[in-house]
Structures are given as structure tokens and as C-alpha cells.
Image 1 (cartoon, rainbow, N blue to C red):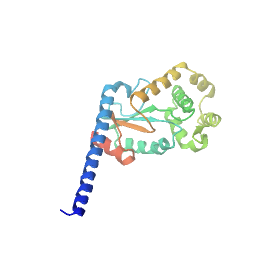
Image 2: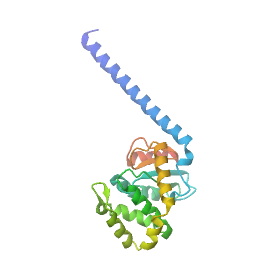
Image 3: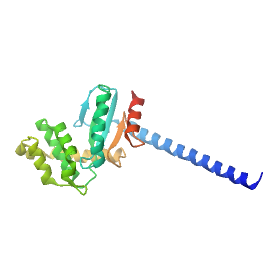
Image 4: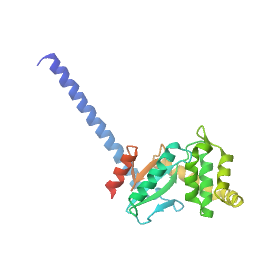
Length: 212
């Protein structure tokens, strides 16, 4: 066997070993994520969590989002389309991972709108006008309050509900679950407890369809 063939075989062998190693690593990561999910099933949905869609749907899509996150804004209409496409078969559970500065403030404000039945409307408005109230990844609180007024919310009532100590406990619980479930970025999706390993619309739909 000449030298060129030996070098070629060596390169091919290294490529095969690398591919096998990558596959094993990804498999281990997926198995680890599945184990974490199984051990922490109750941490995917809390009693205060917002659920959109059929409560008895066979697929539960849990999304950890940050209202100040641009990618979360981009995925908002995608998730709405998924719920429409798989009408009755998928339910959307909204959780929070307020990683951006002062995003916990926005989460509390958003949750406070539930008392006036304006939660979904407020969430949609926050994403629609996000480029106006988020500046350099930091929320402009004054602009957000003006947006609340434009939505027809009772501002005095909203301020009272915003200061409810239960919302501070909610934030603590969300951050605790974020840490336990290994959420590192937003949006982070789980489908029936399985973490989305490859990020993207295509991969999310594929994971949902594999569960249907």
C-alpha cells in the first residue's frame, strides 16, 4: 500500500471517528435532556401558567420566552401559525426566562394584565411594538406604561396588581425552573417535555409532528 493510500485511509478513519463521536455526544445530550424533563415534569406547567389552545391537546408546547427578546418576537407569529395549523392538537404553555435587563419588570406587568382579561392582547402588543420600547436590549419602562394606556387598561388598577407580592414569587419560581430545566437562551421550546435540540422553525415543527 503506497503512502497516499495510507494517508487517505487515515483521514477517512478520522472522519468516521469524528462523526461517531458527534453522534454519541448529541445522543447523550438528548438523553440527558429527556432525563431532566422526566424528573421535573411538574416544572413545565405551574398553576399560574398561561395555556393557549385546547387544554386536552395531545401535544404540549412549552415556551420559555423573554418579552424583550427579538427572537421571541420573531417566533411569536410562528407559534400562532402552529396552533392554527394543528388546531386542537397542540396547546401552548407560556413560561418566562427574563434574561435581559429589567425584563422581570415587563413580565410582572404582563402578568398583572390578567386581572383585566388583557393578557394575550398585551403580549401581542408588546411584541408588535417591541422596537419602540426596547432600546439597546433594555426596556424603556415609561414607553411600556404608555402602551398599556393605549390598550385601554385601567392604569390605577394595573399599578395595584403590578405591586402584588405574588408576582415577585412568580418571578423567583420561573427563574428556579429555568435553572432546573437547563434553559440557557430564549425562546427555548419543549415539546411534551423534550427540549428542542436544533433551533429553528423547521426543527420545531418536525418535533411536534413526531409527537402527534
